[in-house]
Length: 128
Image (cartoon, rainbow, N blue to C red; front, side, top):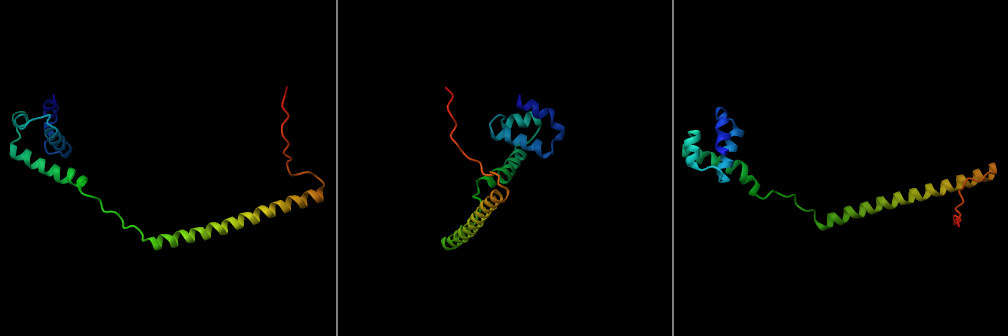
């Protein structure tokens, strides 16, 4: 069945995806070298060459360990975290001042306009 699919696309003989499909089916054991020789008129030397090419360009990069970036030293990491803590403390102070300013604004508005702005939270009565 696989050899029939490969025979249908035989005119794309030098097309790289076709050659990859041939090599993948050969490597997977779906097609033997004799079937490739008889069905596709592909000599064993060509199959061996494609097999090596496939290994070099498709499999070997997956097997090589990828280079990882060097981890920052502990001292640099600690300095970075301390700087982040200082920044967050400044933000916290700013938002606390902002909250106090809003409370003051609401209190002044309530006094001058004689209206109740703050919402009073009372527990809801249970319906019986």
